Image (cartoon, rainbow, N blue to C red):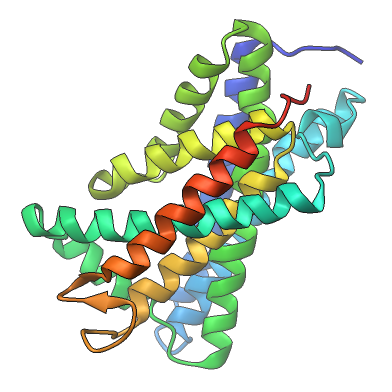
Length: 265
């Protein structure tokens, strides 16, 4: 069993893992699209689940073939209930603040047509569709991406470079690039930085999984909801000021608590 991997090997396995996800998901999508009578959205959601699931196959096979301690190499370490609680608090605050940031950006840079079309394409039409999309977006995607990027890649870069900031920033950049979404690139990159910080500071990928899962869940709700003015959350097309204050309080409280932890090796 080797203690470290080369940076080239780490990036290589990440690329192979991502390609396997695209190929597996693309194959399922092609099967669905090749039959016009098949339920297109059903195959789309299934392709997401299978594709994201296959992302972990090369990575886990690589670690097992080298007789590596899989849980340790993927930072699958336990965390305390208080750490989990403060992570949830931080996550909810950041997600709401990010939603307001997105609303402000759209004032100056309206969402392009492909974003609007994508929301329509992914909008579930049945309860089954919603459940499948939730599994894909809120569970499988965060699991695969966090284990691959924060659990594996960032940890390798930290050990080689001895520079945590550089490791977090580079991992976040790669994470943002593979989403292939120029309009949301900055938001995804900032999310990646925060995910990297959580994983490093707590010594576990579980807090980043919590933030990632909650972020994707709320993104689904924000994208598919028809909420307008007249409810407690929205005020004049923006997040209500009182909600912003609550979100800031949650984010600051959660961050201070997490940041006070001793870095876990």
